[in-house]
Length: 53
Image (cartoon, rainbow, N blue to C red; front, side, top):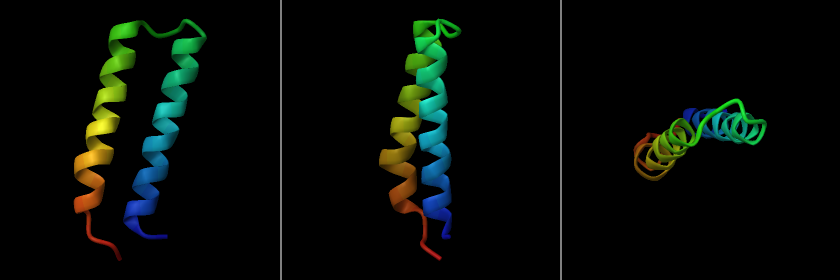
């Protein structure tokens, strides 16, 4: 697997865990949206610029 694919899977796992924690009431809204924003910025700006192996 190349770095882009591994990094994308990690971001997806972080978002899923974030949604589960928020849905279970273990996370408040502000940290939830901060994590979502960081993951979105990473997916939109960082991953496309990574070099494929």
